[in-house]
Image (tube, rainbow, N blue to C red):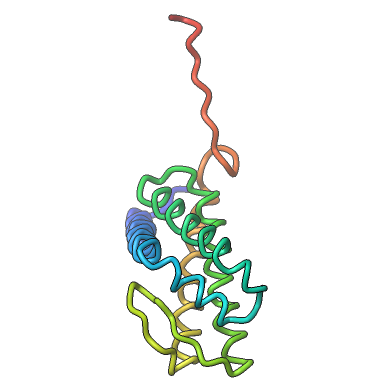
Length: 156
């Protein structure tokens, strides 16, 4: 069953939009990796010594997902990584809201205090919903979860 061209265009715009979003956020977080680690420390979920390595892993994941989305490489795996990241973001903000933590976030390269938790949680829930939509779209991708290609040079 063929999908409509409009749905294909919507999915491409969503994929490229998320690719640009994650590229921008990863570059802004690379420039201020210490602030990202401090945010993770203030969330008070992990020991403080784990904040910087987790910040490095998170920023690396954002960068990889953005590159994969923009090039539509390893699309299925990138959507799963992006969905995992969005779920973690949502979980961090939800637990901070429930516990009444006063956080400041380096969101989109802008260090600011978080005053409106319902709004912040809603934004992260919408991010997760968009990633789930891309994960649904990625089920059409051919190949395995982490596409690998083999090249045949036997005729050379």
